[in-house]
Each structure stands twice: as C-alpha cells, then as structure tokens.
Length: 365
Image 1 (cartoon, rainbow, N blue to C red):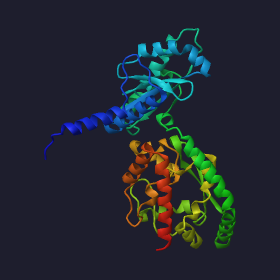
Image 2 (image 1 turned 180 degrees about the vertical axis):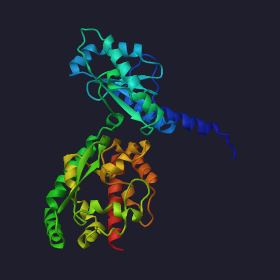
Image 3 (image 1 turned 90 degrees about the horizontal axis):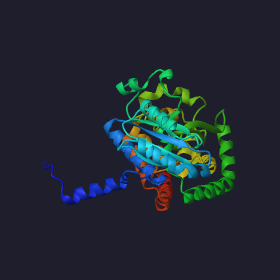
Image 4 (image 1 turned 90 degrees about the vertical axis):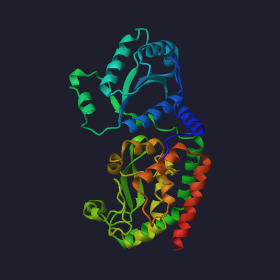
C-alpha cells in the first residue's frame, strides 16, 4: 500500500484543519464563536493524544465593567500567556485563556498570577478553571494534579463541557416551543386514553421519570408513559446477560419487564409523548441526540461526550436506523456528533419526515 498523499488531498486536509482551528496571531483576541471553535479543536486533539487542557475564565459582573477594563485585561492576558495559549471572548461578560497541555494545578497557578497583576482600579473578576481530561482518573497526570488543598489556590474548577455547548439557534427553539405547545393541546385526549389504559393494565404510576444527561452534561428529568412493571430499573442487573447493545448502553429487543400495553405503546412510540413537556421546558428538542441515563453517559469515552454539546432530542439519526441489526455504540455516538456539527433547519426537517416514515413502516409490518 502506497503512503503517498496527492497534492489535492493535502490541500483538502489543510483547508479542513484551518476551518477547525482559526489562526490567530500574537496579540489577537478571538471572538466568542472562534474561541469556542478553538476549544473544540483542542478537545479533538486531546482525544487523539490523551492530553489534558484547561480553560481559565475571567467573569465581570456586567457589560460596562468589562468594556471599561477590557483593554487593560487583554494586555495582561496576552503578555502573560505562552505562544501555544489562546485568548478570547466567552459567552456573557467573560474573557478566557485556552491553555493546552495544562492540568488544573498549572491553570490555578496561572489564574492566580494574572489576578495578582490586575491593578487595584479594576474590579476583581470572578475566576473559574475548566478542565478537559481525556485520561481516566488514577493516571500519572492525575496523581500529579491531586495536590493537598492547602497547596492549591482557592479557584473553583469545573468540567470544560460547560463551555463547549453550542448556542441554541432561535429557529430551533421557536420550532420546539410552538410544536410542543400545539402537540400537548391537540393530543390531550390521547394522553388521557393512554393513562387510563396504563392504570387498567398494571399497578403503578402512569408517568415514568428518569434522570438523564442533557446539554453540556447537565442532568434533567425525562418523562415517558410507563411501559414497564414497577421496579423495572432494580431488575436490570439480573438481565445484563441479555443486553444486545455494546458499550455502556442497555438495550433488549424483547425485554421481559415490558407490560402488554407497554409493547403497544413502544411499537407506536406513544410512550415518548410526555417528552413534549421536556421540549416545551427547553430540556429537549424535537431533533437531537437521544439523552442517555446518567450512569451510561458517565461511562462514555471522552470523544463520545461531544454529542452533549447540543440539546438532546426525541428523534435523531440513530432513531431512524434499521433496528433489526444493532448499531455499534461507537457508530451511534458518531451519528450524534455528525448531527451536532451540521445542525440546520433542513437537517431537522429531514429527520422529522424520516421519523414519520420510519414509524409508519414499522406499524405496517
């Protein structure tokens, strides 16, 4: 096999890399959109190399405070960071430093040093360090960064996933709000009928609530019509040998915990209808990666968590796949990431129509 790469291919790779990582020269400050792209690019590099990086965030209480002192703060930041670091705006009244190959210990030291350089005329900003860790806990790097509390600066730390979330487009929120509100009103009689059928078929609540991981890794309560017996989650461990899905997810096509009415609701996807309330609240969208239970999401590889950059949804690319052949978990995650990277009104409408076609086709089998 030849390892020679054509000139055309090299140009394509170079152009793609330049789109992923916008170039900034010395002394320049990235816009908030470009700074998030830089963080995403660094996240992909860290996933490949197994490295850790940090983002230091300097927050001011209002726009006027930042505008008045922005020039001074920028000069201090740019004058102190390394050549491989990046300085940029962040959402809200914030400026940030992207520090590659830096764990929270090094970022804490840098943040405290910059804070000490600020003149007394500038109101002290609140500082927060976000860390992205691609290696599991317990590695050599982790032992290095786990210093006693008295040796560290009192700067709050958080997961960098919080700042890698994609802004929710106005068109998407508008479509979700209007669609969910209309659906809840028009389908109210269907809700009542399903609730009566569930109560008649088995003892227990009509609605099943479960904590799942949403946008930016934040947990929320998802609502479904109960399709399983009461206490089904406690019986999961005893059915682990029947799991048909690889990875941390748990899927059984013929789950013995499902009630007879539950089979009907799942076949018609009617058990998902209460999620219209999740969409109206803003926890979910009509289209987006399916939210995983918190324990399953915590077991995802770091690169797989990039799917959490967007709002989870009722339907997605994976949802309209042929279920007769289980999709490998890694490929499922890649589908979600592809959606997150190319989210558009056209793609959402395409997936909604595909979902309707999928449901009609499955119903007629």
